[in-house]
Length: 454
Image (cartoon, rainbow, N blue to C red; front, side, top):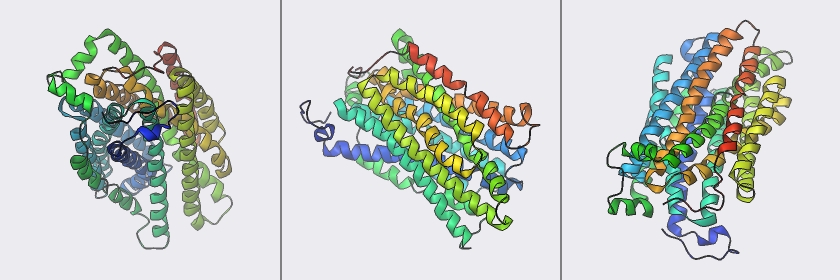
């Protein structure tokens, strides 16, 4: 493992070698473009289905299918994570990272050419498989390649840079909207350009394949013959150990609460904004100006949400470093529960969105810095990729179930209410999931100050 000796007073970045910086940039870029792909889907989901299904954006049938597509995307995501994490422990994290990058970028490019809403759903599942493999592999590579304070900083930075991917998606959306407005591209089919741009990270896969090398802990396990004996052998090694099983349960519950909170609740804030902003601007402006005003307001609300998310992750890393991982998670889930209910209850105009969305972004995204920092500390080297991937991607399955549940609440239980009330009430009910994360935190082991398990 490459690192230079450092004194306690030396800034963490002084002990980072040139290769470690290169490794971090490649791995962080893989996760950055991964999150950019996720957000392009979020921003393009409703316009895509409006075009493919030939239904208005606020149609209940379209809204329900949008949630089904999101759930299917998350199922593919979870399946990819569970598969690629174990394969990475057996065959090498860098090799599987490269495959994951190529899979999600190529499938995103193919999404630009789909002709029906069913094709769109199928391609989202395939894209999700590739996207799901990135996080566990990226975290394992960084955690095992860097030591000391630099490890915490880079793991937190990994998630912090994910907000750059989210913001990048918003800027791409704004640029495409501008091209559609001036007639350069078709407004009706502008979503196809968003997914075509999402194919560009395939180039990063080439850099990963030829520029990165496996971490020293993984190579030592390989040389000693201690790697998992089969493709999914790490599952057996993980589940046979009582402490690892307990850590897996805790890590999974925390991940389910955070991921479900973002993807089965926070994800649909953009749909609430569309309904609220459309009504707001329709009462104040000519009808031909409303679509662009709504799009601009949604873009600004999204940028503010992502900015808040970056602040929230920095706050989590600061609190985790000084007070511990458990206090940081407890603060994160408590804030997410209170603020998310407030947003869905009271958001009623673009102005309210501009101050509410940064708060919700900070609360919901803060826990994601914790996933990067905390999950690799729960598992030893031989099962780290598997353990992190299982815990994190069970959160994806939870979010998928939550999306199906949210679709039921929106279309059936609260479906008779006037729009956008079904979106509001379904999200407020779903906020109970944050309490699961809070209770899991009480039983979680504190890892502050401990070395990674060998």
